[in-house]
Length: 244
Ligand code: NAP
Image: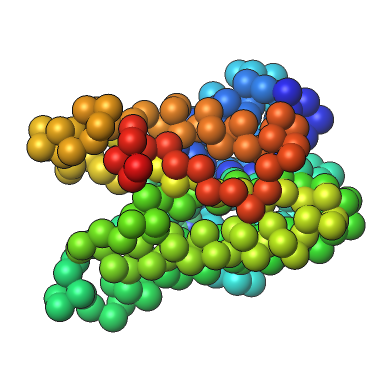
């Protein structure tokens, strides 16, 4: 399904990003992951992608660094020839009530989750326009749709990602580029490790369980694929019904 395509997945070293990169690799895409973790973990992830017979590369880089993203995008295009799929999955949380939240906790989350997504789209855009194609999938959150007490920074960043998704979709639709977002609910990954033992949380979800990274990855891969050729500017929830 993704043969002869190159996919860039930020936050592709673990969790939802890694599950997505694995499925894209299984479909035949060459994979570039962008991460902030250890080189060892990234190498191990690349070995898993390459087991599907595709090329892969890991770049350790902070997505909130505008110039570093510019250089990385140029490096990827030089080495892989193109970027066909961009999945913006890198994200962090620094939860706290507004009354207690420090300025740096607000700025850090906005910088990685929102500005990082902008940086990636911004620097891929000239390439997308030139090749007259591209599929972007941004990872938002139900927190960005509903708001969440204790997550003013995070829900603001994820609401911003929705605005960015729709603006990108409108700006680039005439150039053959689609841009969509997914809005996961509670998904069992490292990010939510401290929540997963809370039974009350599962009770609050209509499906009575947290989702898996693979369930989100399936949706991202669908939106990134030609099967979604008539879908752009959309935000699709994958949340076990929590935000309905
Ligand atoms: P995760 O397991 O913590 O993975 C986060 C990924 O982002 C890691 O690969 C991490 O790299 C990378 N990352 C963090 N800061 C970065 C930076 N400054 N530059 C580049 N990469 C960076 O989290 P996850 O649960 O899979 O979350 C993935 C996305 O889904 C996030 O955007 C998150 O907000 C969103 N989401 C998650 C849930 C959930 O319930 N889990 C719900 C809704 C939305 P390293 O680990 O290598 O440092």
